[in-house]
Amino acid sequence: MDSPKEINSVFWDNKKKSWEYKMVAVDEYHGWTECQYCNKPMSHNIKSEGEFKVVYVKCGCTRTD
Ligand SMILES: [Zn+2]
Image (cartoon, rainbow, N blue to C red; front, side):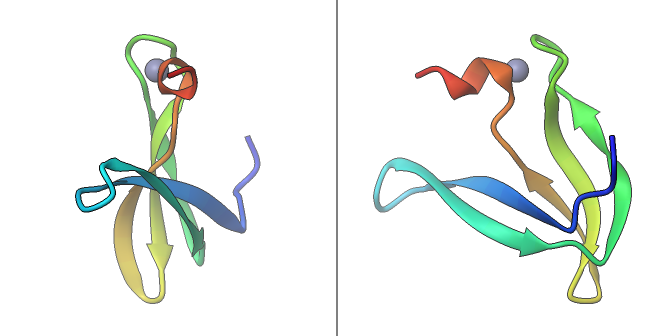
């Protein structure tokens, strides 16, 4: 898997009670964590805007609601 330049991260919006997306710029890519159910990437370890972050994405099982 190539290092992405940006990731469409997903987070739970407590006010809207729904999943929201946010594009996060990737300065450095440090790998990802697999979902234990579908083995698709579930979170990515990145450096963005000078900070190390873990951003979450929708894996295979959360894609279908
Ligand atoms: Zn999954």
